[in-house]
Length: 351
Ligand code: ADP
Ligand code: MG
Image (cartoon, rainbow, N blue to C red; front, side, top):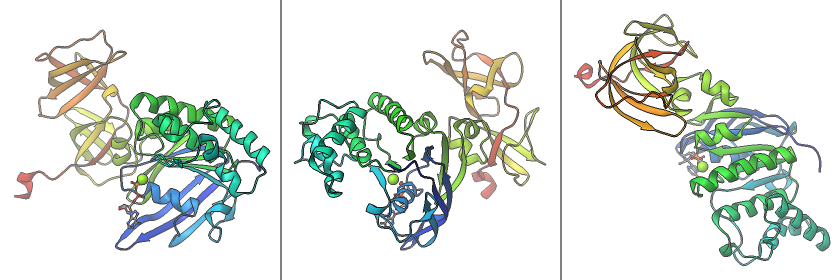
């Protein structure tokens, strides 16, 4: 095996009839890095992944793997392993035969095929399952086999397209951690597509947030969460409250609170400030409101508060504080800066 490769998309454009699915995508994945491509359904994640794999042609820009332009290379020459959302095992082949399939295509000799398939199955924790068929496996086990099948050819790049979204929540979390463990062990350059922000933040070295065919921001999970470049990122990554506010010269004001605007400059005017539930503090001072409900979530409590100006916000706090519905409370904002987006024009303003 040659070492892990970098993957680079430069101004990649993909047009479908009447729809530009990729609108100038720039993305560089370092050798051995795990990047999550995160965005809402339809934003172009699968298309981006398929262009890297060579399953879609591109209409502009370029794709380089390990520095080499792959435009002229068919999928089977790009040295890529792929796992898809839907279970894609051949039903009439055993698990071991499924895993060996790629090696058979590459004309690897029988004994080596068997040895490498066994090794790959052990890597995903299914060493004893080689003789089974897909219908004798759970969804999580089938995706482990799909992962073994993708890795058995020792690709330089691993592409995963929502590999966990058909699984139930508990399996999803354990397999997600397992994928990260295996990726770290192999040091393979990985692009993991998901629409689930928690999943992206949990597994990736860096997360690229995609919107309408473009990468809106790329950064470590901490950078995206703490310093979102746009309101879309702030809203999509983590929970955010929307507070009516006014923006003047880069300062967001709500009632008597004033905080600098995070991210790119925006025109002055009415905005919605995005404030994390954990950045609101229940106390003696600040915005006035009334408790609607409070839920115990184990390690924290989350309380819904209707502010006096009508906005409803979610506050995350210690379980020791247990406000009851109807309590009058004050909320302080702990953030040192906030994201904001232009406020939706109200019906009365339109009329
Ligand atoms: P995602 O994976 O982020 O949900 P996709 O990459 O699958 O999004 O799709 C991006 C956009 O391109 C969507 O609007 C989708 O309808 C459109 N699209 C995808 N594949 C095709 C195709 N083969 N023909 C036409 N439009 C397509
Ligand atoms: Mg998709």
